[in-house]
Image (cartoon, rainbow, N blue to C red; front, side, top):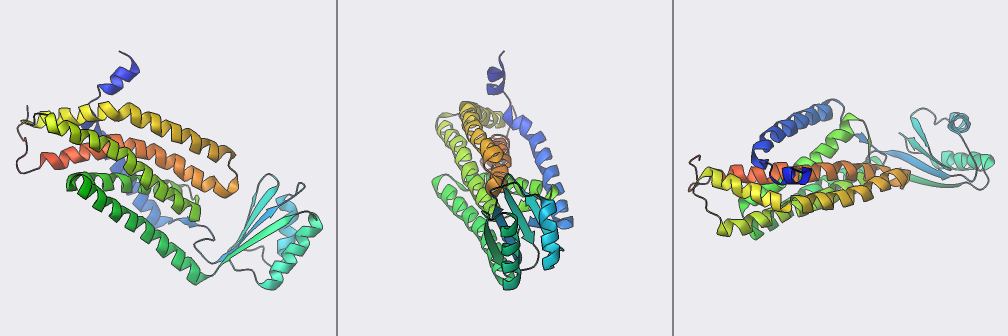
Length: 300
């Protein structure tokens, strides 16, 4: 039997028990990591200055460090070099004199260099963080309402658990590996939520169609219905996920430093999104449906 045929004949409901265990372990690790390490927020979410420099010739970090030391801003700074580019992050907000001194010294190194300085004050940072959390919560609420009206509440619960799982897994990976969380990360999480619900809805729609004509006398009938529905849509889900994954992967490899965290969050989120749509959302709907009062409860 070919790999494709084996995939189409998998017992997704049975396999989901192992997947639940895997996801619960990752979730616990994520909570521990967030409690111990937190997130590595960029200057977008905490006070400070971020300086992006484009050079016309090769300039190294070793040439920049003495400049920062002379200005008195070396402590609390982090230099991230790139190809003809460099990013310097400061934990403190640079004042006007420090801005001018830094620009002057950089132009002495490379007269064709261009600089962009972004500054965030503490109040603005708190507002950005709060708005990001509200954006995720409101989008999740909107999805619950839509799926609840379009399908039923069990589909809505299963869908929201799956997409929150995807978003939290991305947050967990970023927390464990101390990857920088900036505004593009929030955009990536919201994109992942939208992508994940789209993939899940396709499977739910097939389950609903098959429900109209399926016999539901026993619990096994319901298991067969879920397995059949996932099998009918799994290739479409995998092909779609693979296509978007390839695009996101090349964005990560070739897209440059400014969108690197966005691309990385997308790559991680797409993998978990495909996984949860198949092994979390539909089997979870089965668990909720099997507990229905007029459930087909007898095991075959």
